[in-house]
Length: 211
Image 1 (cartoon, rainbow, N blue to C red):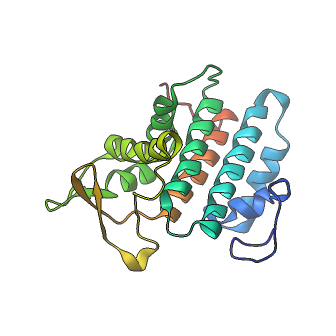
Image 2 (spheres, rainbow, N blue to C red):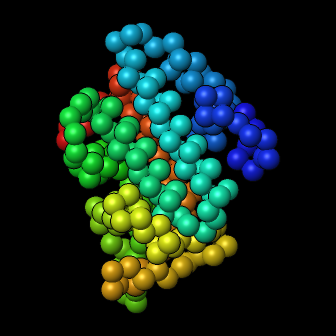
């Protein structure tokens, strides 16, 4: 698969999953081993493969948004948060409707690793105190952005730093000013690492935390 910046058009059905996830692994060999295992899981663990594939597809779609709506991070956040919700619902076997917020929180607070949780907990600070808002409120903030886009079509209000050179950025949000070092790439990688960890849990490598 060509990279995200290529002019060559790639269809979603042509995603090379090993290549897509490779940057989240320590090296190419470990990426190939894990992907090979995922692609050949027994039927009883098939959900691990679905999680792995669906997260990549949704993140891939979110990546494409920047090509047609550059500078509108809320649109990409929508896709990344849908990916988080999808991974959590598949992992925990939820087959009903609704409970989106509940499972988005489950993704970040149960399926993401401690390093990513700590990073997200400190990614948004109230200005001028610079006090971090914490993990739960950070997830609430991102979920609210997702809802603004999905329910009200408000894709143009929320802003984030485009890259690390823009850090930190002051973001007005609901009457409060938030200082953030959070970038879309940061969220993207949390989603992919969380999907890998969820797949590992389904395959029995780690204990699935209760929710």
